[in-house]
Amino acid sequence: MMRPITHSLTDNNNQESDMTRLTREQLTELATLSYFGNVDKKNMQQVLDCCHEDVEFTIQTDNLTHSGHVGVRKMFENLFSGYEEIWHGDFEVAADETTQTVCARFNVYLKDYQGNETRLRNCNFWYVEEGKFRRVFVFMSGENVLR
Image (cartoon, rainbow, N blue to C red; front, side, top):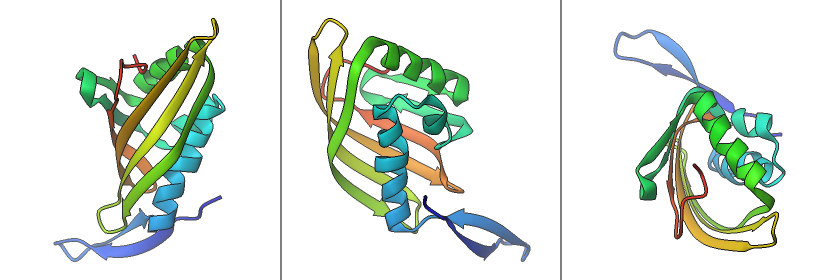
């Protein structure tokens, strides 16, 4: 389990505020293990736990945005019910501690209940605030499976 690092930052009014900031390794783990690891296992609550309640999840290649836990839950309910097998891997990750952002290029394998296979090469961009995804942008190489 990753433990976020908490830094005390000073804003323009010289008031201190605590802000959870993840290390590069923690950002990578959040995207690949906590998020995709649980997507692949169809663990809905653990997937949602990676996101803020008001997360914006945009499939950029389909001009579609799912808003908040309600929208993201519906999106994943559709994915989970449509595919018997889900796998994300072969990650190529760039994570920036300063901006709390992660980018990953990865492969996707899906098998539906009729045995049809889908293979994609996707890229995601995650914007993290206080240890959770605030915004997510998905670029898919094929048809959108996140409706």
